[in-house]
Structures are given as structure tokens and as C-alpha cells.
Image: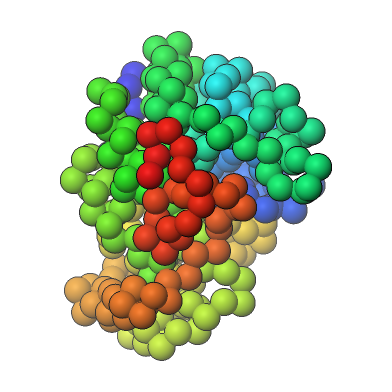
Length: 313
């Protein structure tokens, strides 16, 4: 059955940078307490642990496979081998299919380089494919839905220029665009464009960086005070109010449970947060924390540097 964006839960459990050896128990606990979306990726190197956590939850009766959305991603070294990338993820996860399979970044890296995930050149820089065409990768992704191994396909880290290039050359619209998103990095141009095109936003790094200024900002603490909740709850609830899905991550049982406690933010709450975002944009002070050193211009207004790729900017 084809996947509809409306089916995607509002809050998901993220597994990026989760400590090795703690991922499986965290995934199991997340499903036990009510999460219905698990986010994974080949490049995280922990899909096997995610799979163990899924199996333990299914075996314990905490959830059924058909009631859980599992989302994983095609890594850059498999940009020309999407079917193989999906098969490797499925094998690690112990699943017959995923609900969403996403292009992790619109770049390619040397599949025969020094490392399966992070190949580097002798000078230490990333071993990129400078003739990579993300549209060609997307054409491979389209066929994976027909195979039954992915209910839907989407993208991650796509800017408006990259989305326009993609949509001009395909009839298969990505189900989602997973992007770094928070009041400190509103990416309103991407959010608005995706809404116009029927692409669902999935937000990662919703709290900014660990110990960063967002959690302590006047806007976030003001809304937290108005609602009587923590700043973290405000920042997760912000995305739900915007109609997006948000990924929360923790391996601590109490925090996993706390992150499910979304509150309704009203128009006044959102205006406080939106005004904070608008001021950062005006001052050129948005805070993007996830931007690997690919050396590619990915088309984001705050990172308008790097080399151009085919069908890029």
C-alpha cells in the first residue's frame, strides 16, 4: 500500500549519535511507551541495534510491525546503488520493508573509496563524486516502491533550489523532506515550498546543539513559562504546531517518555517563537549545526558556498 504523508506520526524517535550498546533498549522502550515512528540511517552504523530493539518490542507485544513507521536512509556512498543500499539496511534492521526510505544528502561519495561510509582522500578531505546527479539517484529510488521494499520514498537536507530541480524532472514527489529545523533555523522558505508541493517536513535537531543558546533563549523560556513546561517540550511542540513531524532522541528512559508530552502552542506562543526566528534571519544569525564538509553548494541561503553539482545550484 502506498504511503500517505497524513499517516506519518507527529513525533518520532531518533537514533543519530545514540551511544553504541544502548540503542536497542532505547528503541524497545520508545515503542513500549507509545512512539510509532523510528528514524534510522545506514551511516549511523547502528541499524543492527535498531533492528534488535524493534524485534524485542514486537516479541514483547509492545507494538505490531504494521503499526510502526520505520524510516531509514540511503547513504552517499550508495548514491548509484540505491537497491543495494536498501537491501543492506533491511538486512541490518531485520525487516522485509521500511515505510520510508530517504536520500540522506543530495551528494555522492566514492563507492570504491577508503571507507564504506566515510571515504577520504589522502589530504583528509571527503572523497566526493563531483559528477553526481541527485536526480539520477531519485530515479533509482522511484523503483524501490514498486519492489515492495519501501512503502514510500523521500529526501533529506534538500533546499528549495534542489527540490525545484528534482520536481522538474520527476512525477514522483518525495513524501517527506527531513531537515534540520528549529526556531533558530526556521528554514521557512523550505517549509513553505514543501507545504505548497505536498511534501511533509520531518524536523531533526529540534533543540539546536547540546548546551547551545536556543534552549536558554528569551523566546523559548517565555513560552515555557506561559505553558508551565520545559524549554525542550516547547521546542518539540513547535514543530507539531507547524504541522511537521519532529524527531526526539534520547537513550534515557525518563527523557524518552518526557519527549512524548507535546503541548498545544497557541497563536500568541507561536508569534513569540516566530519573531525570534525572524530576528535571527534578519541579522544573518541563524544557527545550523549539521553541515558536513562535503564542499558542495547545497543551495541553503545561510550556506551559499561550495562547488556546484549537476542539477544543483
